[in-house]
Length: 480
Ligand code: NAD
Image (tube, rainbow, N blue to C red):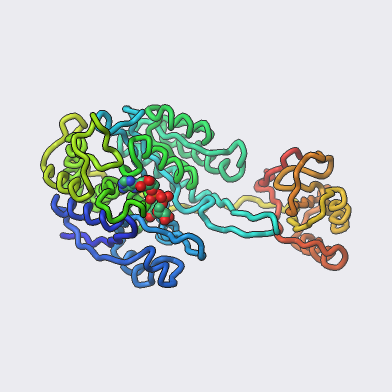
């Protein structure tokens, strides 16, 4: 029986690489029915800032499997990234991006490289919650959730187990972001303990990224929060030889989307130049996902054979290594001609009948005992003296809740700041409970009320300070 899939041909090089991909998999015998939708630039420019119509959403949700070519997000004008929206609306929490070297046929500094980046796909700075708060300061909220961490990290370990991989590495920056990246690292340690047969390790993302770019053979599966995964999967693909070589699977509980990791490369569009391999790799992952592993293996073997034959698009062509520089269409023809052949140097791909990875549904934990300890009031103030600001803000407090610290961009400037510290017009004034008094939300309203009546500072945001199960759950000021 044929599986119905949704296809979007996208923008830039999208239509060329999608035609190439579909031709190859259909020639290989893929049992699919294609329902095409229009998304991307044309839809954006028709005035739809999400780049997709309601009817297209209906098609994607009905078919549940989506093969998508890259699209162009027009600059400016409040256009929302369709990729981010699709991943989040459909709950595609896991983004799997295999990057391996094709040495000795494609030039790379890293002949031994076979890593899979498992990128969290729904949260982090990609929540897209941004505000300008003062003339000088804008903010972007970084949201990391326990369910988000548990799902992606468990997926990474289940994936490693299923694929016979030996190690899962986690990258975070939890030496700086102790709450957000700290949670990701903590959950990684908890879940790693459930898979004793798989080695695990954690690296701070900066040195981890440097190591990955320098010695990728040290890594196997790497799991990371959204932003690091986005950046480092491009790095990983590029150091195998070209961003045009890597595909990605976006997996959710209900739906899945498959794509190339690269963008729409508008400068290469319409010239029969683009390498269709990235989208083809996405399509191979799709065929495995819909239970057509025999076709997936056939296509992968034909593709590997074509790379071995030295038939290369411009992005991987190298005098001496490659035999023929070809365009998208000729490369596609060569892969089709190789269907049924096996690679001689690369390991032949065998049909794998791996079931879809299903994680247990997240069960909400028993709520912690949550105690209010104070509040951060953020103010827009154009003065320059922290002492002067402190004198104003102290007036808001009372015997039970007092001003304890002022920071500017996170660095403590009162009490006892440094004159050298550069200050903007965005100040955080921290009020903390005195003694054993139990603050309530009314106390926070009272601070605001006194401000309104007597001081009249412009409070642009408040953030409550809590302890969970007795542990203060907020960062200290730098230098506090
Ligand atoms: P890009 O990935 O499109 O291009 C980066 C470089 O890689 C360019 O030099 C390009 O020529 C080359 N390249 C990319 N794919 C190639 C291929 N298949 N064959 C040969 N060379 C290839 O990144 P960009 O230039 O930053 O972005 C262009 C547009 O793509 C932007 O509008 C961006 O928003 C969009 N984009 C879309 C997606 C997506 O739809 N998933 C992802 C990233 C970027």
